[in-house]
Image (cartoon, rainbow, N blue to C red; front, top):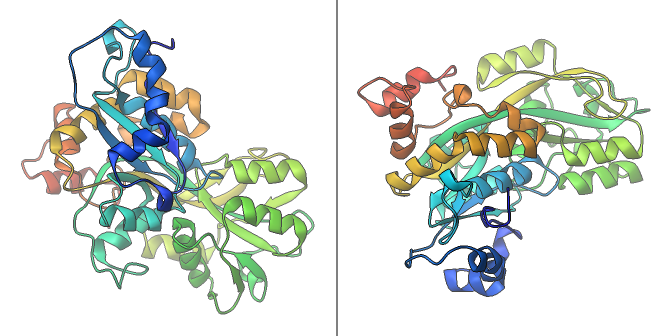
Length: 372
């Protein structure tokens, strides 16, 4: 893609520091980022600019990388060449902003507060938020949470050192275990997994760390294991495997089967041998990574974003940008959705022939392989 055709996209610092006005966004550098492509593009009549934020996760996880690709794909700033001339195939006048955050739980809370238009969220976390279950029980049900698409399967990683005596999940009892950052979807999933094996935060010595920090602490001998959930290969785990021998613990036992029956949003997920340097294949559990949006976002905008997501140009960006990108296919878009579709997304899927029922929410339910 040429410089003239490349859409502008920003990957921003953690959201607590995010400016509150569009003018502030321009002041900190988006205006500068847009300057080059706009100077090279032909002059056009004034077109309103819309910003669309995508909450992602920490820089050591897959959400951060996938979110940046999605933000790039949906962007088509004023003055950009049109799609049929080799330019942007995004939504006209839209600038996607991929926002780093602690993870899925914080993404939900920021969306609820109106500080994010959309975010990437694990299906189990979205399901809990929609129903007002822990860790959202004090907030109440987030009834305005809607889905754009199911993207790909995230896989649970339970990482220990290669020479560790920890051989199975139950061996974590009394050990120092990093469960994920506060506000992350990993923490939600780690708690569910511990409970499935008769453990809890009280029976381990918990730490609440980002993936990168957890890896460093494991190397230093300060913790014995850490959880991370994401689409493999995960940068934080790949970096650790290059530094020293590690192992991944599996979830292929009766406890895991009972968890899948109780929470059918979970599925079996194989991490193949040498996905990480020197690490053997392991049978783990997976959970859908889903693109969520607030119900209040206009239907025409969400329809345009959904159309762009499944455009061949966007698919190529995803396939070339990350190994999980090849798993993001329209055939999986409605599988295992944790919440109802946004009306704009529903309209696109109807046009594409994926939905046929008269009642939008009911037809979305029918398209699910898992009905929470």
